[in-house]
Image (cartoon, rainbow, N blue to C red; front, side, top):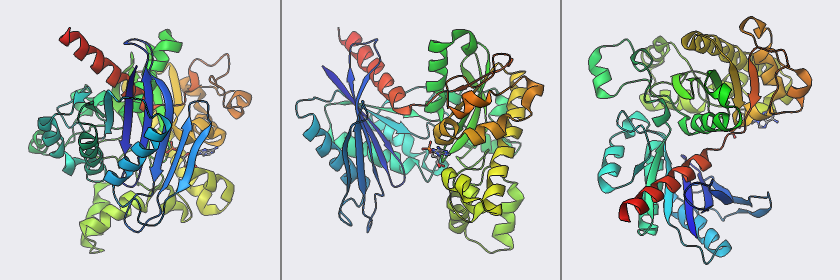
Length: 402
Ligand code: AMP
């Protein structure tokens, strides 16, 4: 029996998934999914993991400083998995890597040459790429026998038309890699594949997906392929997020630099960690907290979030030349009836009509029977996309060896 470990290393977290492969075609079977949060010196990290039926296997805090870095976090996760599945042999480790730069439009095996190339993209995603690669290095040491592969958040968007790939700045920057990459690609791939399974006629059409979580973006799909996305060069652009600003006039950066005398590191901190819903509400980055708060600032933060989603929706519909399906996913998209209702309100002019009851119940189809645009909720699953890529890579290698 083959097994796959999926790893998704964030700045202070490590998500892991343990899958069993049932052949080369069937979907990988998620046996255990979990995460270690608050990795870092001086922190008390926390491990949580569930079986596929929802049974909680562990929910425990470590002592202060017990998980100071990603190497240790991976070692702790592996210790836990070995306790749970002492006999299981790992055949592949699939890594979520945020940036594949201009090179990669599909998963790739992590050889030393590929690792070196991916390290060159660190300046393009300074807050994510180094952690992703640290996770990969740690796994390469721990599992030298397993096939290791990288699955990129940018890959799904690599075939955008040129006008959606560039900025109007001197051309030399495009050649240096300053492009509109787009992110959340594993999530959009999952939605595209799921649409293909559950409604192939909708998959063929024009779809706008709103991935609304702590990170948020939207993507326009034509025939299941990404045509345009709200995120650009970095994971800052487009929609406002939990703590990130979203679309911003670059003149604001100049103002911060020249008038406020801020350093690049201070600006980075302001835009990545102190802006978005947190910055506007002065209260929280968490939508549940804002919905419950009832303060004027919390309401305004929600209003801005919704306003930007509606603007981007209009822009994506124009880029696609129409819309047949709208999909909500991510923690907010999947769970917040209020946000979905506000986004869809008065959108009859593009054929969107929300069914109030279905929306309140978080049903799969939340449009009315008469709505020209189908509005759906599809819970996203980035881990299974990585596990499928690992399954396919193992199958190709077995075929090549036969
Ligand atoms: P994610 O990053 O996809 O895990 O999404 C996290 C976001 O989803 C946070 O802002 C949560 O507050 C939000 N969220 C989760 N459940 C709900 C809910 N029932 N209502 C509103 N927001 C929610």
